[in-house]
Length: 133
Image 1: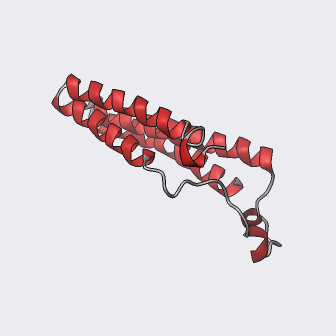
Image 2: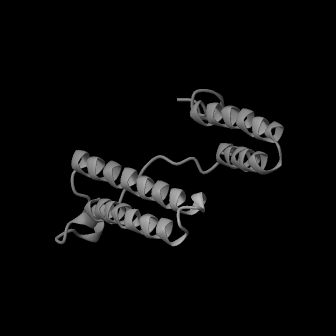
Image 3: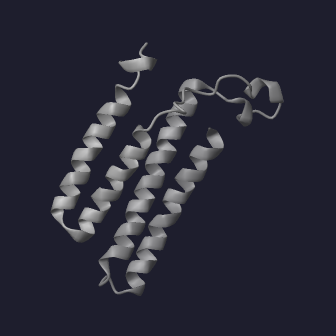
């Protein structure tokens, strides 16, 4: 994960001067642009730091080593739920949340309620029903 972490951290550092230059170009009057670029920088730095610490914790992957062979990356890569409908419900909740910011707060509250239901359903998906462990 070394390449990914450095890529995100370098992007985070890159967007700081871009935001400052953008702020000077608009004479600090248009607040959305430079604040969005600063938040983008912070997001890139957070992802880069997370990947850096995770890479140190789990060690080098086969993709990170030059002497790795193809078969070293085979096998189970994680746990996925191909039959789960909860990501779709959570996506709809996010849609209603962002729509509520543009249309009205009552739509946002509907989206927030639906998001709580979707998150609880997704987290407890393997605790009950056909796929309980």
